[in-house]
Length: 356
Image (cartoon, helix red, strand yellow):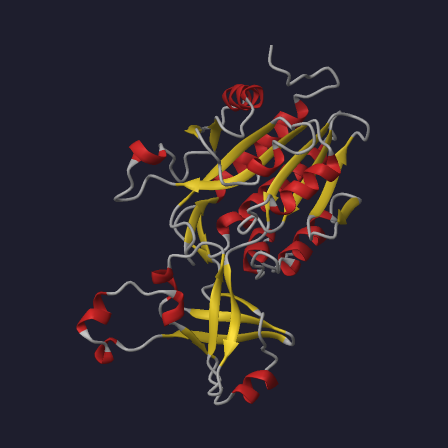
């Protein structure tokens, strides 16, 4: 029988879940995890977990954050227009004229971003950079009472409207690539490991609140709870195979060129060396990314948890980050899952990450 459902990746990317409101994508993730492993759970921070392998063996944390950037309703005026504030880091120019999905108490409500027409702007206004405060959301309602009857209220989150899109070759586009694909990859690595359980215990974690996790978000609490011997974080990085990107500033990584392995900052040197050696042994195309300061990923929260957790960071090259049209290669996702599985299989009880 042919399964006509959207793929797990598509379902995960389509589920709306800004930071602090990750319930929907987390549920999709756990349902998929439960289809091939019996050990699936969650915690009070909204983090989701799934495990395979030998309990009592060296524990490996595989982390990818499941949240996305979004917006939140802060005010509703008497005419029924919504005013919003960003959840996470937006380029406000991206928001202009977008369609949106408000996550109301009775379900999703469609709307559009409104802005004063260019015809009505003064010359100085046309030259001004648009700020979120210059925009509003129009649900088609005519009053505040009508908005409330639609199930929309102060504090409701919203995401941009463009749906999952398949491009040429193996490229896909979605508003939630950063970093729903990380949560996807760690679970796909677990799926590979479930086919032949390793001697280690691999725990995949779909972490929460990374985009607003200035104190560590769900990565900090989940790392403390798991107390792993080693952790691997999967996130996205800037693709430099597009016009007007300065490789001298951000390094080199291309869509379709495999994962980028991070050196420096939160990335433990022995974890990096093992990842690089395994990528070469497995014939997995990859690049190397320098991070002399913070990585601005879950790795920053994990590597300092407890007495310190040796942590590696593997990043998926991503075009148009923090936009409704982030673009990645599915092949890169699969390569990264293979590398994670190989890393877990390379471990045994004698493996040490204490530098000599």
